[in-house]
Amino acid sequence: MPQRINIDRVFHALGDPTRRALVEKLSEGPMSVSRLAAPLAITLAAVVQHLQILERSGLVHTEKAGRVRTCRIEPNALSEVEQWFADRRSMWARKLDALGEFLAEEEKN
Amino acid sequence: MNPTVTHSTFTIERRYSATPERVFAAFADPAKKRRWFAERNQRTAEFEMDFQVGGRERTKSELGPDTPFPGVAITNDTVYQDIAANRRIVFAYTMTLGDRRISASLATVELLPSDTGAVLIFTEQGAFFEGSDGPKMRQEGWNGILDGLNAEVE
Image 1 (tube, helix red, strand yellow):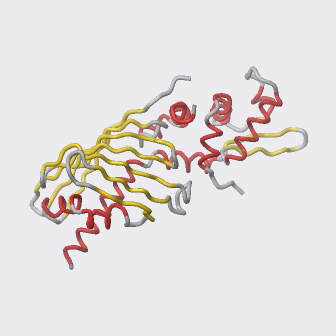
Image 2: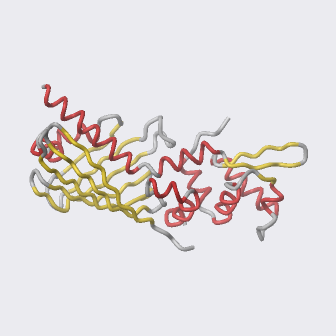
Image 3: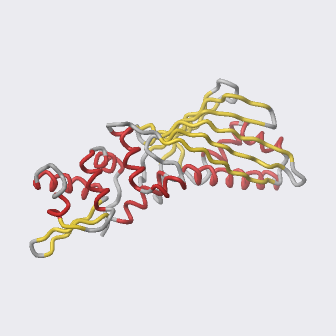
């Protein structure tokens, strides 16, 4: 069950360059924690901590199968946030449609 | 970190069966503007406006349950820059999500008479602090958002 996105947690999660690097890496596809950690110049333990923050924000999902913990991007979370940020144009499109409805109602009255 | 800002311009055109005078009045009259701009389809906690050059307007709303951030406040702070009755309104505005400033824009509303009423051309020239610049951002994908977020969160 995907977590509900929490704006403060998302901003906090993405406010760190290492966590952004993890998200960028995971956007290529799911991978194990150790493979994710390999190119980074930090300890595995630090990577796990970063992943916990990303998981709590709802941006990343991790799952343990046997000994291997696999991480993946929560696609709904990403597209929800992306959609939200991209929304300025549609915000005005909706406002101007509302203006049209208002003008039509005004005409009737 | 290198803070980044994304700049973007977009235009929206709408045709209304009302005259330019009536469309202009819907922007100029606070009671009318409140109805279509502030209160339609959203919960607004605060709306005040002073429709004159240099005058300010503030709309503070709560994001609805269908948004990713239900209950979070979104605030539009506007300063009117130029007003030509029935023809043009230019305003600068910022958007603030919670307590984070997410964009600053210059918006121009132009009204032209048409055979059937009015044509409205809305143009926005914006600086988007977290990388939100509409369709272009979608093309650039997540890296753009993540880079752009630096300006906000660092």
